Image 1: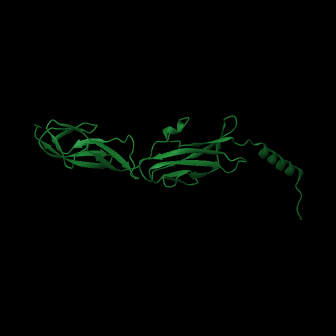
Image 2: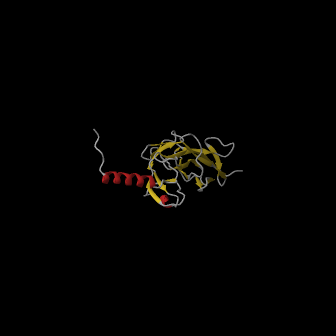
Amino acid sequence: MFRSLRPAQSARLALLALTLACQPEPVRIVVKLPKDMPESTQLVPFVPTFTEKNMSLRLRASAFDKLERYMGPAKVKWTSSDPSVAVVAQDGLVTILSSGKAKITAETTETQTPLVASIEIPAAIPAKVKIDPPEGDKNPAEIHLGEIKQFKAVVLNDRDEPIPDAKILWRSTTYAVTVTPTGEVEGAAMGETQLVAEHKSYSAKHALNVLDWKK
């Protein structure tokens, strides 16, 4: 036999149900970066490009009401548009797997109407450096004293794609040539040397043979 509720208990339950029914639902959610990242304070978060495999960050989803008041963390499910680039766990932890871009999306699980927000995660993981000699040059390339030649280099990612604006440092293994920061090479002393293009721990070399003054 069921015991009937006392009037006071019934009143409390009714008040609780009314309170829950009157609680406003969020009207939007926002995906945010970790609080310890300087970029998290920006109105539109800027996600820096990840440069190493297995780098990670933990995203957050915040809920807001129709008056743009913060309502606390939103309960969401997380998905990645490209798991080959980045995967996301259900606690918001994103792990980088390869170069590319992945859109990480949060979707509410406890609202009448699903709310969705996303953020794009870019990754450019360097894998090697490639030197492009002047057209027609061989390896080793020949350059005369006082002659100037322009070399170029490109940093390739782990998908063998060029990384735009990747910083390259140029140097020569001997004083046979001088090299500018842009890869311009000038013959300085007769002999052999190696032209080196470096990006972080990656490098490429191109042999040079410096000849006497051109006649």
